[in-house]
Length: 102
Image: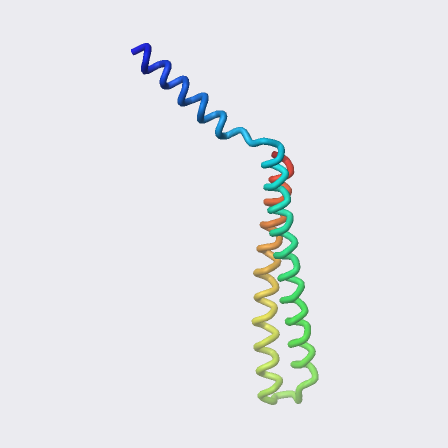
C-alpha cells in the first residue's frame, strides 16, 4: 500500500508539473492568439469591402436588371461572409485576451 501511495503522489506531482507553463510558453500562446485575431480581423475587413463593392454595383446597375439582381445577391453573400469573419475575429480577440491573462 505504501508503494501505491508513493506512486500516486509521484504521478500527481508529475501531472501538476506538466500543467504549469513557463512564462515563455504563456507569451508564445498570447502572441499566437493575437496573430490569429489580427488575421481574422483582416479577413473581416476584406469581406466587408467586398460587400460594399457589390452593394455599389447593385446600386449603379439598371433597376430590375439581371446585373442588379446578381450584384444584390453578391452583396448579400459578401455581407454574410463579413459577419461570419467578424464573429471569428471577436472569438480570436477574446482568446487573445484570455491568453494574456494566464
